[in-house]
Image (cartoon, rainbow, N blue to C red; front, side, top):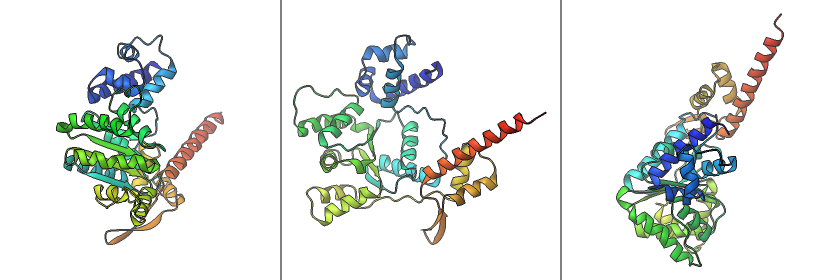
Length: 311
């Protein structure tokens, strides 16, 4: 890892410490010792392993990728959802197909609002205890030692949000469709304790809405309460228009307008009704990304071959 990359991580560390409230809380979040975090901040890097740098970078949300994010329609929609939730203390669900740009929109918003007591978890197949423990770490708190019931453990996280309520904290849960029912049900208690005093945005694939609505339909315990607290209304995105695909191309070094159109067409755009009109959109931006990378490789290779054949 280069010193430039390490400097970028230190910048992220400083932002996170400001957001969470202290270096010790940040160390708890990262699962690192306060001494290691202090060494990173003070430029004492000689004895810190690359593995520790990567661990802290990952836990702090630092991004290494050279892929550039464009402000597409879906990106702007995610910004609006998060701004509205933060501004009005809403519990909001976003449920849309994979590859639509939900996560990039969420990460982008968090980067620009990381000092305003906003928190983000990338969820896995967690039951309630695992979910709450990860939430406690994200809040910069230590997981209590010894056995503690799930209810009391959850209260630790709730109490922290109560302490922060004057700042209107926001919690964003990415890939919330991965959470097990017991983890989702914790959000009922969070709402009950902090209605109109914090915001929660859950983001997932179409399965997020499908599973909750199915739970309501079959009267499964807790699902009607979850659906109610999130307004029974799920935000759906649109997709990437031809203009969006061109913007992604431009942001990543593809400037040929004909190639913009060719990439859009190769991605199999489909008609979609938006308001009173139909527009063609690409649903999976991951496919756009792969094709752009392929075209960049082809361009590099052709330039290399052109240099090689010069007399």
